[in-house]
Image (tube, rainbow, N blue to C red; front, side, top):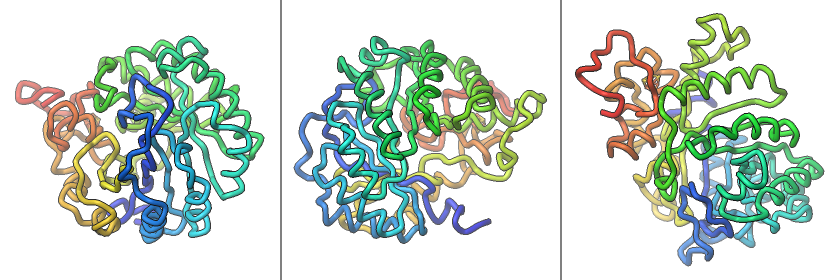
Length: 360
Ligand code: SF4
């Protein structure tokens, strides 16, 4: 395997939640965002040390600065510049607020920011603002998308799929196209944080949504990826086997899907290291421990990378190496990060459903 893509050695995506502070009160907030910054947030110097550690994973390591709203940190541009100068690929997921001005985006672009991801959870102001808990958020997001384009920043749109938003997906797809995004990242709800207050869609519907997303990816000028739904890869392979997806990614069979702890890692605002932001089992803290060592050698991360150790349907599944199920959702619903992903309706070949259920 290309050493750069070996997910036992490095996360392809490293998220640093630089703060939990945020103006918005989104219904689904994983971070239970607060209006004030936490007094024990990583300092600027500790953040730079974290970025130095990230650089040890690989040249051009992707680091996503998330929140909360990362724009709540006054040192944000300094951190982006530091990471960029170290050779990291710096990306940002700010909240859609009036604070995300053209001037801020120009400064971030000048500092070397590679991509910006904005959230859109409705196709119009009424639906998006209701979900985000803030009147004006839709308009601020659309304005920020235009300003990002003007600043030369590639745009990603993030959308949460749950019962409250699923009917909006076609309208959101149209907005993604209109805004000129390069990627639509579709997150399937994991019931953690305030996300527990939302309703997930049923497994069969999730499969239909993923098939629709695969069609969308074929038809639209932007890419489509899923978050916490690696069975999108299984759905694409099955479509290809059925002859419905002639252009499916030929690498699907060879590469494993990125799941919590396997190609993915998360560092909290106070430095705790987790397999993902939706799997709240800390393996250490960057203040005391070596991030690279935690990723490569901690028991939890190592276990999450062993697809043959998965339980229930996922452990018996012929797609476990390309999919593996959402470890975060398994943990959120059962307490066991190696259990089956309850959002997946697939029954593996030869699996005896009387011995286990989708949620065992
Ligand atoms: S059963 Fe598990 S591994 Fe198999 S496709 Fe579903 S989520 Fe993926």
